Image 1 (tube, rainbow, N blue to C red):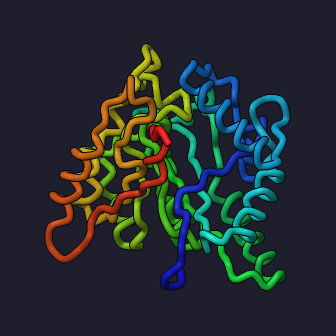
Image 2 (image 1 turned 45 degrees about the vertical axis):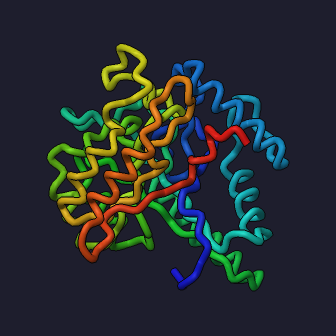
Length: 286
Protein backbone atom coordinates (compact mmCIF):
# COMPACT_ATOMS: atom_id res chain seq x y z
CA UNK A 1 0.00 0.00 0.00
CA UNK A 2 1.11 3.55 -0.72
CA UNK A 3 1.12 6.21 2.04
CA UNK A 4 -1.93 8.44 2.39
CA UNK A 5 -4.22 6.12 0.48
CA UNK A 6 -7.88 6.44 1.33
CA UNK A 7 -8.84 2.80 1.69
CA UNK A 8 -12.22 1.13 2.09
CA UNK A 9 -10.92 -1.94 3.87
CA UNK A 10 -14.20 -3.78 4.40
CA UNK A 11 -15.91 -4.70 1.14
CA UNK A 12 -17.65 -8.07 0.82
CA UNK A 13 -18.04 -9.93 -2.46
CA UNK A 14 -21.34 -11.39 -3.67
CA UNK A 15 -22.40 -13.78 -6.41
CA UNK A 16 -24.95 -16.47 -7.20
CA UNK A 17 -22.99 -19.69 -7.69
CA UNK A 18 -24.96 -22.78 -6.67
CA UNK A 19 -22.24 -25.47 -6.45
CA UNK A 20 -20.26 -25.28 -3.21
CA UNK A 21 -17.67 -27.64 -4.67
CA UNK A 22 -16.80 -25.11 -7.40
CA UNK A 23 -15.89 -22.18 -5.16
CA UNK A 24 -12.56 -21.67 -6.93
CA UNK A 25 -14.60 -20.83 -10.05
CA UNK A 26 -17.46 -18.74 -8.67
CA UNK A 27 -18.87 -17.18 -5.52
CA UNK A 28 -21.17 -19.62 -3.73
CA UNK A 29 -24.38 -18.17 -2.31
CA UNK A 30 -27.39 -19.93 -0.81
CA UNK A 31 -30.15 -17.37 -0.10
CA UNK A 32 -32.48 -20.18 1.01
CA UNK A 33 -30.41 -21.07 4.06
CA UNK A 34 -33.37 -20.66 6.42
CA UNK A 35 -33.30 -16.85 6.48
CA UNK A 36 -35.23 -15.39 9.40
CA UNK A 37 -36.82 -11.96 9.39
CA UNK A 38 -33.56 -10.31 10.49
CA UNK A 39 -31.69 -11.49 7.43
CA UNK A 40 -34.66 -10.89 5.13
CA UNK A 41 -34.62 -7.21 6.12
CA UNK A 42 -30.93 -6.87 5.32
CA UNK A 43 -31.23 -8.89 2.09
CA UNK A 44 -34.00 -6.49 0.99
CA UNK A 45 -31.87 -3.46 1.90
CA UNK A 46 -28.90 -4.79 -0.09
CA UNK A 47 -31.09 -5.65 -3.07
CA UNK A 48 -32.60 -2.15 -2.99
CA UNK A 49 -29.18 -0.49 -2.84
CA UNK A 50 -27.86 -2.59 -5.72
CA UNK A 51 -30.90 -1.82 -7.87
CA UNK A 52 -30.50 1.88 -7.09
CA UNK A 53 -26.90 1.62 -8.30
CA UNK A 54 -27.93 -0.02 -11.57
CA UNK A 55 -27.17 -3.64 -10.68
CA UNK A 56 -30.00 -6.09 -11.30
CA UNK A 57 -30.39 -9.15 -9.03
CA UNK A 58 -31.28 -12.40 -10.76
CA UNK A 59 -34.59 -12.81 -8.93
CA UNK A 60 -33.23 -14.94 -6.10
CA UNK A 61 -31.79 -12.15 -3.95
CA UNK A 62 -28.48 -12.54 -5.72
CA UNK A 63 -26.53 -11.12 -8.65
CA UNK A 64 -23.87 -12.75 -10.76
CA UNK A 65 -20.35 -12.26 -9.48
CA UNK A 66 -19.31 -10.88 -12.88
CA UNK A 67 -22.00 -8.18 -12.68
CA UNK A 68 -21.00 -7.30 -9.14
CA UNK A 69 -17.32 -7.07 -10.05
CA UNK A 70 -18.19 -4.80 -12.98
CA UNK A 71 -20.15 -2.59 -10.59
CA UNK A 72 -17.46 -2.44 -7.90
CA UNK A 73 -14.73 -1.84 -10.51
CA UNK A 74 -16.65 1.09 -11.99
CA UNK A 75 -17.36 2.40 -8.48
CA UNK A 76 -13.67 2.55 -7.56
CA UNK A 77 -12.55 3.92 -10.92
CA UNK A 78 -15.03 6.81 -10.72
CA UNK A 79 -14.78 7.51 -6.99
CA UNK A 80 -13.44 10.85 -5.81
CA UNK A 81 -13.48 9.72 -2.16
CA UNK A 82 -11.44 6.48 -2.05
CA UNK A 83 -8.24 5.31 -3.70
CA UNK A 84 -8.38 1.59 -2.91
CA UNK A 85 -10.74 -1.18 -1.83
CA UNK A 86 -9.99 -4.37 0.10
CA UNK A 87 -12.19 -7.16 -1.26
CA UNK A 88 -12.91 -9.84 1.32
CA UNK A 89 -12.90 -13.60 0.92
CA UNK A 90 -15.26 -15.57 3.18
CA UNK A 91 -14.39 -19.09 4.27
CA UNK A 92 -17.15 -21.58 5.05
CA UNK A 93 -18.15 -22.62 8.58
CA UNK A 94 -16.42 -25.75 9.87
CA UNK A 95 -17.29 -27.84 12.89
CA UNK A 96 -14.79 -26.99 15.63
CA UNK A 97 -14.75 -30.61 16.85
CA UNK A 98 -14.99 -32.79 13.72
CA UNK A 99 -13.42 -30.16 11.41
CA UNK A 100 -15.98 -31.03 8.72
CA UNK A 101 -17.22 -28.29 6.40
CA UNK A 102 -20.83 -27.46 7.25
CA UNK A 103 -22.32 -27.25 3.77
CA UNK A 104 -25.95 -27.28 4.95
CA UNK A 105 -25.58 -23.98 6.80
CA UNK A 106 -23.12 -22.22 4.49
CA UNK A 107 -24.69 -19.06 3.09
CA UNK A 108 -21.73 -17.33 1.42
CA UNK A 109 -18.40 -18.86 0.46
CA UNK A 110 -15.76 -16.80 -1.36
CA UNK A 111 -12.56 -18.79 -1.78
CA UNK A 112 -9.06 -17.36 -1.46
CA UNK A 113 -7.96 -18.76 -4.80
CA UNK A 114 -10.94 -17.35 -6.63
CA UNK A 115 -10.76 -13.86 -5.15
CA UNK A 116 -6.98 -13.41 -5.17
CA UNK A 117 -7.00 -14.09 -8.92
CA UNK A 118 -9.89 -11.65 -9.44
CA UNK A 119 -7.97 -8.93 -7.59
CA UNK A 120 -4.95 -9.46 -9.87
CA UNK A 121 -7.17 -9.15 -12.97
CA UNK A 122 -8.82 -6.03 -11.56
CA UNK A 123 -5.48 -4.32 -11.03
CA UNK A 124 -4.20 -5.30 -14.46
CA UNK A 125 -7.31 -3.72 -15.97
CA UNK A 126 -6.79 -0.53 -13.93
CA UNK A 127 -3.18 -0.37 -15.13
CA UNK A 128 -4.26 -0.72 -18.77
CA UNK A 129 -6.63 2.22 -18.29
CA UNK A 130 -3.92 4.30 -16.62
CA UNK A 131 -5.98 4.50 -13.42
CA UNK A 132 -3.78 4.80 -10.33
CA UNK A 133 -6.12 3.01 -7.98
CA UNK A 134 -5.91 -0.44 -6.47
CA UNK A 135 -7.89 -3.38 -5.17
CA UNK A 136 -6.39 -5.39 -2.33
CA UNK A 137 -7.08 -8.97 -1.33
CA UNK A 138 -8.48 -9.79 2.10
CA UNK A 139 -8.13 -13.51 2.81
CA UNK A 140 -10.30 -15.76 4.99
CA UNK A 141 -9.13 -19.04 6.52
CA UNK A 142 -11.23 -20.86 9.11
CA UNK A 143 -8.91 -22.30 11.79
CA UNK A 144 -11.38 -25.17 12.26
CA UNK A 145 -10.35 -26.58 8.87
CA UNK A 146 -8.44 -29.84 9.08
CA UNK A 147 -6.09 -28.36 6.45
CA UNK A 148 -5.86 -24.84 7.83
CA UNK A 149 -2.05 -24.91 7.75
CA UNK A 150 -2.03 -25.62 4.01
CA UNK A 151 -4.64 -22.95 3.30
CA UNK A 152 -2.93 -20.34 5.48
CA UNK A 153 0.44 -21.15 3.93
CA UNK A 154 -1.10 -20.55 0.50
CA UNK A 155 -2.49 -17.18 1.60
CA UNK A 156 0.76 -16.01 3.21
CA UNK A 157 3.22 -17.27 0.60
CA UNK A 158 1.32 -17.29 -2.69
CA UNK A 159 -1.01 -14.29 -2.53
CA UNK A 160 -0.74 -10.59 -1.76
CA UNK A 161 -3.22 -10.77 1.11
CA UNK A 162 -3.28 -7.67 3.31
CA UNK A 163 -5.48 -9.06 6.10
CA UNK A 164 -7.39 -12.08 7.43
CA UNK A 165 -11.19 -11.81 7.70
CA UNK A 166 -13.36 -13.65 10.26
CA UNK A 167 -17.00 -13.48 11.32
CA UNK A 168 -16.78 -15.87 14.29
CA UNK A 169 -20.51 -16.59 14.75
CA UNK A 170 -21.02 -17.27 11.05
CA UNK A 171 -17.90 -19.41 10.65
CA UNK A 172 -18.26 -21.12 14.06
CA UNK A 173 -14.86 -19.87 15.21
CA UNK A 174 -14.09 -19.80 18.93
CA UNK A 175 -11.66 -16.88 18.96
CA UNK A 176 -10.43 -17.77 22.45
CA UNK A 177 -9.90 -21.42 21.47
CA UNK A 178 -6.72 -23.39 20.86
CA UNK A 179 -5.57 -21.44 17.81
CA UNK A 180 -2.19 -20.30 19.12
CA UNK A 181 -0.30 -21.80 16.18
CA UNK A 182 -2.66 -20.07 13.74
CA UNK A 183 -2.22 -16.76 15.56
CA UNK A 184 1.56 -17.15 15.63
CA UNK A 185 1.55 -17.62 11.85
CA UNK A 186 -0.49 -14.43 11.42
CA UNK A 187 1.80 -12.52 13.77
CA UNK A 188 4.97 -13.76 12.04
CA UNK A 189 3.54 -12.78 8.64
CA UNK A 190 2.37 -9.42 10.04
CA UNK A 191 -1.08 -10.21 8.68
CA UNK A 192 -3.75 -8.37 10.72
CA UNK A 193 -7.01 -10.04 11.72
CA UNK A 194 -10.15 -8.17 10.69
CA UNK A 195 -12.62 -9.73 13.11
CA UNK A 196 -16.33 -9.00 13.38
CA UNK A 197 -17.54 -8.02 16.84
CA UNK A 198 -21.05 -7.22 17.96
CA UNK A 199 -24.44 -8.20 16.48
CA UNK A 200 -24.43 -10.04 13.14
CA UNK A 201 -27.59 -10.21 11.02
CA UNK A 202 -26.32 -10.52 7.45
CA UNK A 203 -26.03 -14.29 7.77
CA UNK A 204 -28.50 -16.69 9.47
CA UNK A 205 -25.65 -18.20 11.50
CA UNK A 206 -25.09 -14.82 13.09
CA UNK A 207 -28.44 -14.97 14.88
CA UNK A 208 -28.50 -18.65 15.78
CA UNK A 209 -26.88 -20.53 18.60
CA UNK A 210 -23.97 -22.57 17.32
CA UNK A 211 -26.16 -25.69 17.48
CA UNK A 212 -28.98 -23.91 15.64
CA UNK A 213 -31.45 -24.42 18.46
CA UNK A 214 -32.58 -20.83 19.02
CA UNK A 215 -32.14 -17.24 17.94
CA UNK A 216 -29.23 -15.53 19.60
CA UNK A 217 -29.03 -11.86 18.50
CA UNK A 218 -26.05 -11.19 20.79
CA UNK A 219 -23.98 -14.15 19.68
CA UNK A 220 -21.43 -15.15 22.28
CA UNK A 221 -18.81 -15.88 19.59
CA UNK A 222 -18.74 -12.22 18.52
CA UNK A 223 -17.86 -10.62 21.87
CA UNK A 224 -15.01 -8.12 21.73
CA UNK A 225 -13.46 -9.42 24.96
CA UNK A 226 -12.47 -12.60 23.11
CA UNK A 227 -9.97 -10.58 21.08
CA UNK A 228 -7.59 -10.66 24.04
CA UNK A 229 -6.45 -14.10 22.85
CA UNK A 230 -5.12 -13.19 19.37
CA UNK A 231 -3.74 -9.90 20.72
CA UNK A 232 -1.83 -11.80 23.42
CA UNK A 233 -0.35 -13.97 20.66
CA UNK A 234 1.04 -10.93 18.88
CA UNK A 235 -1.66 -10.48 16.24
CA UNK A 236 -2.70 -6.96 15.27
CA UNK A 237 -6.50 -6.94 15.36
CA UNK A 238 -8.92 -4.74 13.45
CA UNK A 239 -12.31 -4.86 15.19
CA UNK A 240 -15.07 -4.69 12.59
CA UNK A 241 -18.09 -2.54 13.49
CA UNK A 242 -16.90 -1.59 16.99
CA UNK A 243 -19.62 -3.66 18.68
CA UNK A 244 -22.21 -1.11 17.55
CA UNK A 245 -25.92 -2.01 17.39
CA UNK A 246 -27.70 -2.87 14.16
CA UNK A 247 -31.24 -2.74 15.56
CA UNK A 248 -31.08 -0.34 18.55
CA UNK A 249 -34.34 -1.63 20.04
CA UNK A 250 -32.91 -5.18 20.18
CA UNK A 251 -29.15 -4.81 20.43
CA UNK A 252 -27.16 -3.46 23.33
CA UNK A 253 -24.97 -0.54 22.38
CA UNK A 254 -21.52 -1.54 23.65
CA UNK A 255 -19.58 1.00 21.61
CA UNK A 256 -18.31 2.89 24.65
CA UNK A 257 -17.35 -0.34 26.42
CA UNK A 258 -15.40 -1.32 23.32
CA UNK A 259 -13.69 2.07 23.36
CA UNK A 260 -12.56 1.42 26.93
CA UNK A 261 -11.35 -2.03 25.84
CA UNK A 262 -9.29 -0.47 23.05
CA UNK A 263 -7.64 1.95 25.47
CA UNK A 264 -6.78 -0.93 27.82
CA UNK A 265 -5.29 -3.03 25.01
CA UNK A 266 -3.33 -0.20 23.40
CA UNK A 267 -1.05 0.67 26.30
CA UNK A 268 2.61 1.09 25.42
CA UNK A 269 4.14 2.09 22.09
CA UNK A 270 2.48 -0.44 19.77
CA UNK A 271 -1.14 -0.25 18.65
CA UNK A 272 -2.54 -3.75 19.08
CA UNK A 273 -6.15 -3.16 18.10
CA UNK A 274 -7.69 -0.81 15.56
CA UNK A 275 -11.34 0.14 15.03
CA UNK A 276 -13.12 -0.48 11.73
CA UNK A 277 -15.97 2.05 11.69
CA UNK A 278 -17.69 0.73 8.55
CA UNK A 279 -21.02 -0.05 10.24
CA UNK A 280 -21.38 2.87 12.62
CA UNK A 281 -23.96 4.50 10.33
CA UNK A 282 -26.27 1.46 10.23
CA UNK A 283 -28.34 2.55 13.19
CA UNK A 284 -28.06 6.26 12.46
CA UNK A 285 -31.27 8.27 12.24
CA UNK A 286 -29.80 10.58 9.59
